Length: 273
Image 1 (cartoon, rainbow, N blue to C red):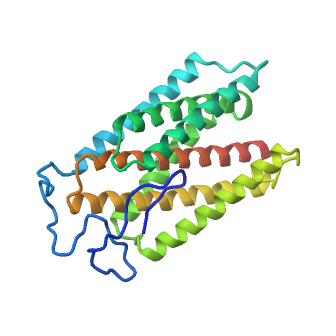
Image 2: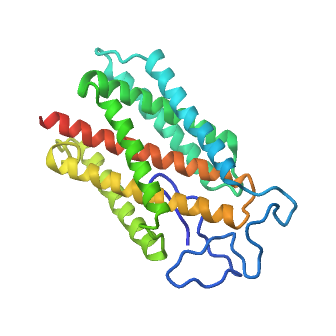
Image 3: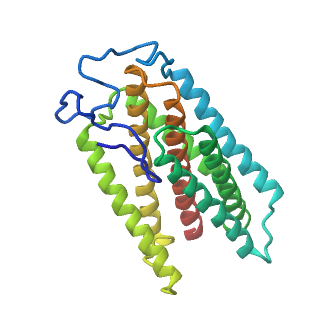
C-alpha cells in the first residue's frame, strides 16, 4: 500500500514481499521479517535517518518556500491594472512546482535539488496569490491563514502523539478515497468555470465554498497524520538518511495544502460578511 498526500504520491507504507502481515495496520516498507530495527546504519553501511535529519531538511524546504514567497511578494508587486499577468505568473509557478513534484515522485531516490526547486516555485506561487488576496480580496487574511495552518499542524501533532489518531490501513483507505473525490470535484469546478458556467459548482464562494474549504483542511490534517506515521516508522526501522528529504517533501506539500484551504475558507467568510 502506498501513502500519498493531496498533491502527489510518494513512497511510504509500501508492502514488500518479505514484510510481515499486519491485519488492519499499515506495513512500513523498512520493516522486514527478522530485520533489525532502530539501527544506526543501514545494511549497506550508510547512516540511517533520524528525527533531527527530518527536522533540518523540513526546515530547509519550508524555509525555501517562505523565502521565495516573501521575495515574490516584494519583487513582483501585484498591478491592479494587470491582475491577469500576476495570476499568469502564479499559474506558471504552480505548474512548474507540480511538474517537479511528479518527477521526484517517479524517481527511485530523493533529489534535494528537485525538492528545493519544488519549494522555490511553490513559494513564488504562494507569494503572488497571498499578495493578491491580501491586497484586493481580503486584507489581513494572510496572517490568519498562517496562524490557522500552525494551529491545525500543532493539533494534529498533539493528537498523533497522544494516540488519539490511529493511522491504520482503513484510515489510509478512507483518506485516499476522500482525497480522490475532493480532487475530482475541484477539477470539475475549475473546468465548468473555464467553460463559462458562472461559478462552476459554487465551491469558491458562499456557504458551500466554506464547507468545501473546511473539508479540505480536515483532509490535509489527515494527510499530515499519515506523514507523521511515515516519519516515525522510517526512523524506527532504519531508513537510509536520504529518505529524510522525502519526509520533508511530503510535510511541506501537506502544509502548503492546509494553508491554501485555510486561505480559501477565510476569504469566503470575509466575502460573506
